[in-house]
Length: 342
Ligand code: KG4
Ligand code: ZN
Image 1 (tube, rainbow, N blue to C red):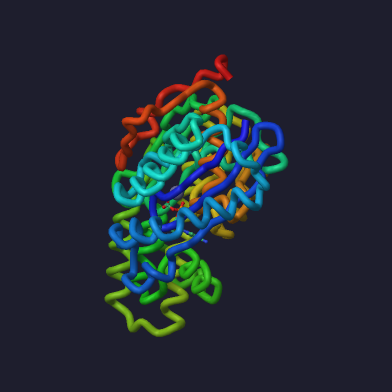
Image 2: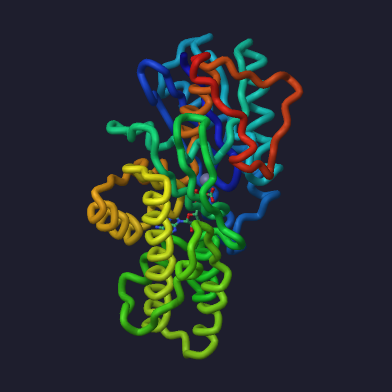
């Protein structure tokens, strides 16, 4: 089965063609980072307008690159949520309409299920079950993944997502948007010994996160010093250290709590090299393994939507013509997947 996947939940326009037999055949991404960088964050209305402009040419490009003949697409998967409603509607409307025009089934995919399954696109995909750490600009989740569609939420953030904390800290330091890569780069020259920031909620049992206190800590630190280049690097370093440490501590706890051997990391913050290094050390220490999607599939992309959609479409799931989007959509509310129907 050959599927077209479309991703437009936030500020990246993604499209891909995935084939059940041949695997990923093509994928492409048009980033809006420069557009939103002018405003220091994503402007939802502008994101939606840009998706309208970028999506059709991107779809054409991936179809050409995959050398899909006329009538070769057998299903269309688009991100139906969670995300920005206007942005989601662009991908959903185009995806559902293309499926109608081609007379093939369509399906709305959960964006976070896409992230969760992104490591399955790699050469050595992890076996189920595994624990997944999903860390992006909008989410910080620990999930026990028993199989495709069998997810148990272990912990989530009570306030800011970790990517959001990176973005807000970067803003406080006058660094660029998106904040994650900017913080990581600045931290490179920082002195790790100058400050030790708190590791929120690690001193009590449980797998939930809270990052707003860490952000306040950064704000108070920044207001008490003169913000020269050296200090910016030191704050970035202390912040990254604390955020990464917090994630690693909770991952270790989650693996032990549910007795899993494998950890997968997905979402934009999964591109962070310090996080990767510390998780490598932690998992090696406890005889466990960690898996990542390739860098470009850590952040939003069409390939993960094509893959997740393909699995569900192959299992017989369908979206009728009365489609809608779900800007708020908990992973816990996702319909279970019936592998038996695949
Ligand atoms: O998954 P994603 O592309 O979009 C969604 O939020 O769904 O994640 C974007 C987030 C942003 O907050 C960005 O600052 C963060 O991922 N990020 C990073 C790095 N690269 C991207 N955070 C830390 N270190 C990075 N290298
Ligand atoms: Zn995402």
